[in-house]
Amino acid sequence: MVNGSVSELSYRRLSIRDADYLVGTAGAGPPVLLLHGFPQTHYCWRGVVPALAARHTVIAPDLRGYGGTSAARGGPEGEGFTKREMARDLVELMMALGFERFTVVGHDRGARVAYRMALDAPDRVDRLAVLNVIPTVDQFERMGLGPSLGYWPWFLLAQPEPFPERLIASAPDHFLRFIFDSWSSEPSAIDEDAFAHYLAALDETTIASICADYRASFWRDQHDDRADRAAGRRITCPLLVITGADEAQLADAPAVWKNWADDVRATTLPGGHFIPEEATEPLANALGEFLAGRS
Image (tube, rainbow, N blue to C red; front, side, top):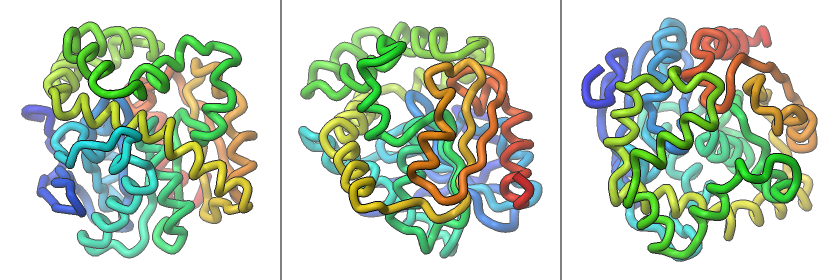
């Protein structure tokens, strides 16, 4: 692995809409799209890729504006970074790679893009796995309850430009250390090489994209979810809900998702928020079972 690349992946760039995507691919077989979360890149999947690539074609891009994917700056309400727009980008990306139908696995922000893909493009998504999230509208509705201090990015990063951007840029090392130390059960799971990669990826451009992503959730995404819920739109493909054992605020995640999907399976894995790195082998096993239809 060099400069944040994953040795098993072959890389290319694809222009989709107004973004230039960095995309890694590996293996052969039915396609599986892996979508990372905040504040990471596709590098978080480095331990999972080899196991999945033994039986599947793995596609691991950096999300719009994150890591090695460049994109036009977001609008004042996160325009360009709504999960609906990001989902549309990735459906087009998969079609450009020759995949009409695929499984999508998402962690954190990537999971929000993933379930939006399943809602908006049900003819493209065969299976869906979401890691450590509930739908955005449900997340906002519970913000004032329970461990609300942990929800700080939803409001801080959604503040008008350039306030949060300047705060992060003033101390990016401290910003990342705080997140990895407080959100994981075992911070050493994000080793020094991984931390160095995530820090290097946190430049002025990606910071702006991250904030646009959160602004979009506050101003747009939760309302898209609410409209879908009111209309009775549901996820029709099999859905696997994966939570970390120490993510106490998500203990009811499977029950929440049953309000959104017809076929919900659930499992809890060791660790905290960063499942791909804290529970790499158990996650690879759970996804393998799900992809094989045995979950």
